[in-house]
Image (cartoon, rainbow, N blue to C red):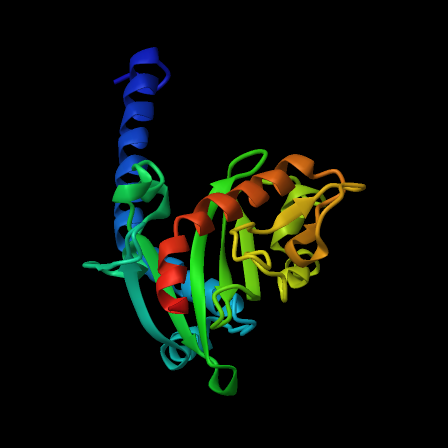
Amino acid sequence: MDTNGNKYTIIYASVMVVVVAVMLAIAATQLKPFQDANILIEKKQNILKSVNIVSDVKQANDLFTNTIKELFIVNSKGEKVEGDAFKVDLKVEHSKPVDLRKLPVYIADMGDKGKIYIIPLRGTGLWGPIWGYIALSSDMNTIYGANFDHQGETPGLGAEISTEKFQKPFIGKTIFDKDGVFTSVIVAKIGEKTDPAHAVDGISGGTITSKGLEKMLYDDLSTYQEFFKTLKK
């Protein structure tokens, strides 16, 4: 075959495409278990961070086991239902009506601070999904800790939701008012009048992400209201 001809070039290119595709498929298959393991470790790290425990990859499994003493699923009526809380996909659950959703709950044993209830969250920012965890003290009202992250928010603006500077002010805020009415937490714009017990400062220049996070908090925490009432009783 003429190695300078078009036919040779086309055949050679086709063979190389097939070979590379096969190699990539094999690599992806072999690496998937490691990728899945890394995703699980990262999830455990994020849950721990919501109760103010920072862990590295090596520590995460042991710290999670020693800290998270219960995990289960409830429905919108506050009733426990069958299933593995750790495997619940919030993206899938958000596509369902509220009364059909599986709502995961993680309970951390924080020693003399008692049980802390961790609620996973998922919402939408400016450029894509945002998510996180809110940890509530045993009064089911006071925020013990918070951890948020994002897929593609703007660095220096919306991406600030993943920083300690933004997350720390949530500690001590309450999600019910003095009359027991659910209020969640407002992520306030500059100059917005709010009750400081239920509000934190938003991100300057990141209003859409801030309000997306505020909506995420309200929408997801509100689905747990019956569960919170059950525990308060």
